[in-house]
Image 1 (tube, one colour):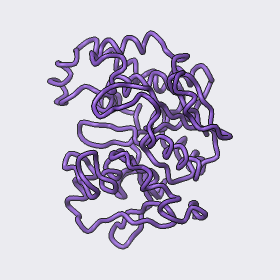
Image 2: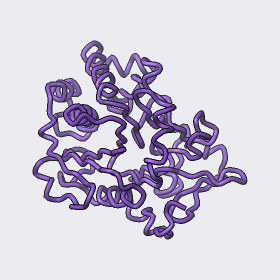
Image 3: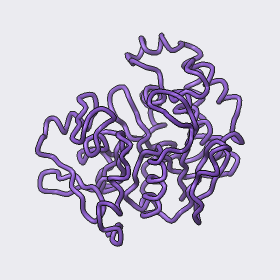
Image 4: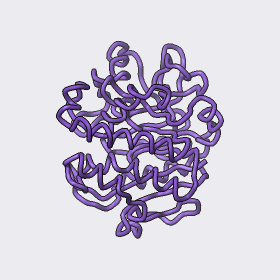
Length: 303
C-alpha cells in the first residue's frame, strides 16, 4: 500500500506563495501517525528542498511526469497552466503518469489539506474487494471530490482523464455548464460527470452511516463536508453546513448530530452510536488544530 500527495505551485484566489503550504506539512505528519507505508510526494523541482526528509517519504519532481495530455488539458480549461483550477485537474494526469512509470497499483490519494485518521493498510482488502477502478468521496449532485481516493492502477485514471479531454474538446466549457447544469467546469464537476456517465468505473466511498459499504469499513469518509462542519470554511466558522452537500443536508435535518474526539480521532455522534470518521478535509486550512497529537491520544491513535 502506498499513498501519493501532490503540490503544484500555482496562482489563483487566496494563493500567496507557490511553495508547499503549512497545512501540507500537517497532512504529511498526520498521515505518518497512522501509516508507515510509503508516501510519494510530487511537487515542482524548485519546491523539493522544502519537503520533510523522513524514512518512507519519497520526493519526485513533477516536471518529470509531464505529458502531452497535461498540455492538452491546460489549453482546454482556459484558466492558464499555473492557475489553481488548472492544476487541480491536471494533477490526476501526473498521478496517472507517475503510476505508469513506476509500475504502481492500489494507490491512495488525497488533497494536501486532508488529515488521515486510520491505518489505510488495514482496509486494503476491503478497497480491493469492493471497488474496481476508482473509489472517490461523493459530495453533492454536481460535485465529486477526492477527499479520499482509491486508484487501482494507472489505466483507471487514464480512462477518466481521457474522458475529460474528449468531453471538453467536444462540448467546450460553456456547453458543458449548460448541458450538465454546472456553474463551473473544474475537476469536481468533471469527476461527477464521469461517474454518472461511466457507471461501474467509479465507486462511492461511504460518507454517511446509511450509505452502502458503511458496514464494510465501519467508518465514513469526508469529501469536504465533515471538515467544513468541524473546522469551517475560509469564510464561515466551525459548524458550517452546506445545503448543497449530501452531508450538509443531513446535518441541517439533524441538528442534534455532532462530532466528538476520542483518542485523537473524530467520531460522529449518530443517535446512540459513535461512528469513526477516517479523514477530514479541512477547507479552512487550519489543519494544525485537528491533528491527533493536538486532540490528544497520540499514543493510542489506533485504539
